[in-house]
Image 1 (spheres, rainbow, N blue to C red):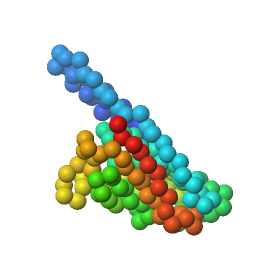
Image 2: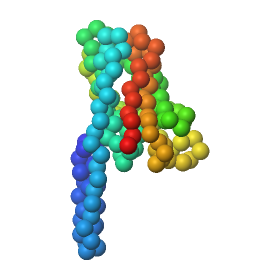
Image 3: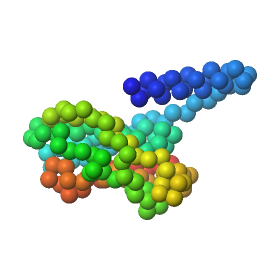
Image 4: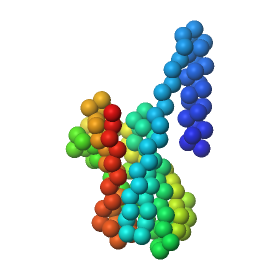
Length: 144
């Protein structure tokens, strides 16, 4: 559903650009997936880039435990290299037992109201605590 919404936005930008008589360019970032292991739970997080904002598709996968008890809204934090920490504002993931996938959303702004990511941001870390008996699993993205 998110991909459909992004496609509609891109089409709208293209149409708007052509109606102005100037070519429009749409630069959608390539998704970047990081994988971590938290005990017997595999965590895969895909970030769709700074243009989309601090929104991640997260997949939890295991054959050992029921993943429905993990509420990433309570267990995750996003850190930047500017020493900022953001807590999630949403974890939209249906129950799935041993296989669970959802959207983990962080606020688009920092505590001071400035954008979560600036031109100075070079590293973000998604920290997920207390999954699979592991105190913390950290997934990292380096920004250009």
